[in-house]
Length: 84
Length: 393
Image (cartoon, rainbow over all chains, first blue to last red; front, side, top):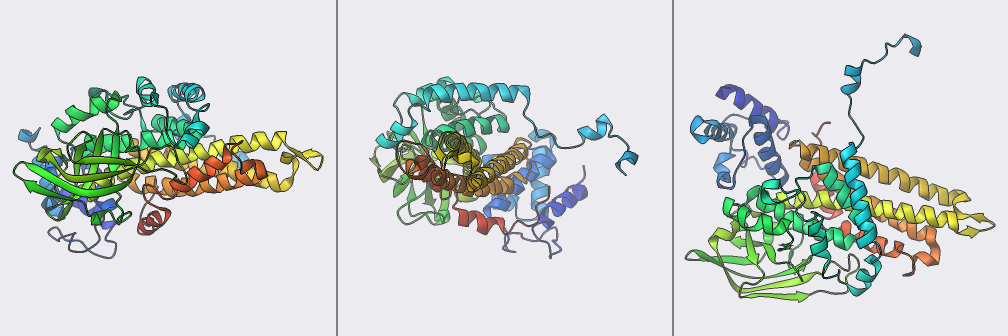
């Protein structure tokens, strides 16, 4: 799956939380002020289910979840052949 | 006009939701009921009065596989599916909310370690928790901090490869007998979760007595006075103690409490139906009086509704659906309120008898109130859920 498709999926998911905002790939979702602990957990669950990865304790870094592109970057690193 | 509708094909019928337990789940529930009838129901009232469960009960629960029952087989757990786990929790909650509390907090800590713990933490603690050798407890609340978990005042200061913890935890369920505490503290000024073993120097436990409900859940104050633990005891990472580790633990707790509340509701219904059939007033059983029947009907309806909400949350959790968090919250919020309403009506139906220790419904009422406060009060659920209008079936 290419990066554009991944970004589209992440954007679709996050758009549920940012209804009136056209979220851009590099936009900081924490700076927008909508992220609470329930969204944080849902985001982890979404990424794991949608992309078939497991977010580990060492992946807990805000920079991995800061934007659509950061999230897809995490997915790509976790799904790269060397990461399997 | 309905004659013109084509009969549904088997395929079309399969497309709908299935709302029945599997044969294996029904068999498991029968086993839970037999254990609860033999080992918990006869003693629950006494444990409530004595403010302690029997010392050998955790071992009996562990022998049945009821501690850490959700943990995967590789960690020594029962690997139960979420619905079967819910049935276990309901059955135990139907008999004794204090014992249900033991499972709740133990499973919260186990789930936090499973979800966000390091490999070493999982290997060290989860098999011991599944065997019941180590009981887990959540050390979150403090004298000045309840719902606002990010503001805990306990601090963990780095000292070489160690952390030194100082603070005061309160209302720690089963803190009197737990061997492992998941402590919420400020580390580098950020909320962080840290495992603290009971036998560490600097840990002092003081029982709390005379609570309103779940009186046998052996609450404690936990004081940490310069308690030194290795930095490797951090679960997750610094700063993620509330947003991820605590959230995972609390979601597990809410799921458990929701099913436990269904158990209280069912216990109220069972007791009320029995009493209304046996008790006669004005020449007829109470069950023949319309205002009593109204209360019984509401109780039946709400218990069923609560159980269905729990099943839906469980199904989503089982499928690791992102919507599980919100649906679990919905279930917990509804079921906690439902249990309180059911218990209030059960006491009402029992009259003066219901206010005495001769019947269990007064205990159900006291226990149900606790469920409206723990694992997020009703008001915290309302505040959070009101932001979740986007959720869809």
